[in-house]
Amino acid sequence: MLPRPVLILAGTREARALCGRAAAAGLDVLASLAGRTARPDLGVPVRVGGFGGDDGFRAALAGVGAVLDATHPFAATMSRRAATICAAEGVPHLRLTRPPWPVEPGWRLHPDAGAVARAIPPDARLLIASGPGTLDALAGAGARRWCRRVDPAPPDRRAAWIVGLPADEDVEVATMRDLDVTHLVAKNSGGSGRAKLDAARRLGVAVHMIERPPVPAAGEETHDPERAFAFLRAHADHPRSG
Ligand code: NAP
Image (cartoon, rainbow, N blue to C red; front, side, top):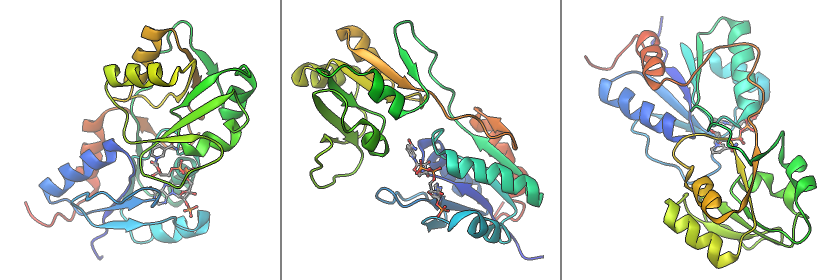
């Protein structure tokens, strides 16, 4: 049988770290990016762009030995599909996600951005750290809106952009003070981007947190990168070296 790589559904820091380790270990993996942002060098072969729905993903599985889903915890469509179709086709599958941030007293929790929009007062000055994908739902919320995004984009009537990666707490405090932000909208992504939450607590800015989408019924999830790497080792059984 021809060697078949492990497909790593990427697009996160965790995926990038795993790809780096797989490259160093000479494991046969293929990373997949949705193509939403500039393409990072992952050090392993990469395919870019959607699979073309469920049928496209099912077809792509023919060429892979296993699937490690290391997409963002909010990439619900991709993760549900990967878990369900891998289970149906008998393809080994594991999902790696960062643990969520523990809920803090005072946070308002919401199932989606639409629910956030309904809870925001009309005079609010919103910092939207939940991604441009939530902007349609939030376009009418509050009096002023700023939205953080990774890559530059043309001006948008829904919000002013703040371009760049999340900053450290002092920079987040300075940004919120400069803009006189009253409300922060975030997703419970977990991981290192929590400085905004600490900054909001320091300034008394109201936090509206979008909770994670439900975990797919099929498939298994881990928060442990070592377990994910062991999965790669176990299934990428045609190493290029070593
Ligand atoms: P999604 O809603 O679950 O997926 C939307 C569509 O994007 C999928 O149906 C699929 O298109 C394509 N897609 C998603 N992940 C892909 C991947 N790794 N490789 C190839 N195609 C992929 O996902 P999303 O929320 O739009 O996220 C897209 C990417 O951005 C993911 O890789 C995710 O990890 C990353 N990301 C998302 C967030 C977030 O907050 N959602 C934050 C940071 C990074 P087809 O149907 O055509 O196959």
